[in-house]
Length: 239
Image 1: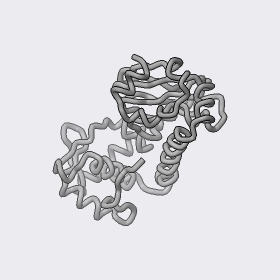
Image 2 (image 1 turned 90 degrees about the horizontal axis):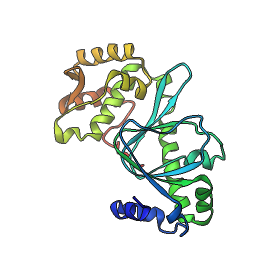
Image 3 (image 1 turned 135 degrees about the horizontal axis):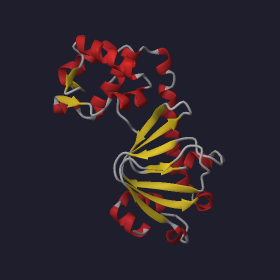
Image 4 (image 1 turned 60 degrees about the vertical axis):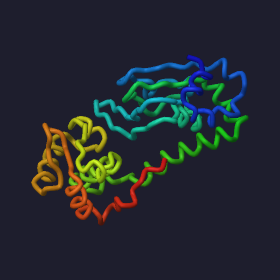
């Protein structure tokens, strides 16, 4: 697949490639990855920039002791390697793993650096995306240090329920394993199990074949429990 064909399939890409230097149309390579593929590995020398056109992915931080921490989950349009390049660093700081089939347009690092030096429109789009990620990170930084597991997990469940349109669907089932919750919330599996039991005993959640579920009535009850920390009526992801 060529970049021209990809832009026809994903019209939103036109805004990003509108003023791209002409020679880059021929130097770009498009790749499609199945779910569960590592497309960007922490601590590797970065020699490319990626424009994610299709598919969801997660950004994780892997540590030498074997622990994995999920920083964020993103949807297209997104980028690969932009933070490392803009920071002027040689090696990557995070790992990116696909969650669904993902299509990425790759450019060499030098081509990307030349591109943003010539195309202020594209540079603004990249800067906006980076700023949104930094804003989300800054807004939530410290929660895992100062809030109890009861709050952290309930906060996660309520945000997931809002994103899955709980009021319309009346009940949602969180399609997450305990291991996935550990990686995303930063709480040990043992603590998650204890917290799930506590939330269930309080009538704030239910279990469906081992998965966490929450009804619209439970959702509203949980909002009242947690409203001193987060106002979910105003919670809408914008970046």
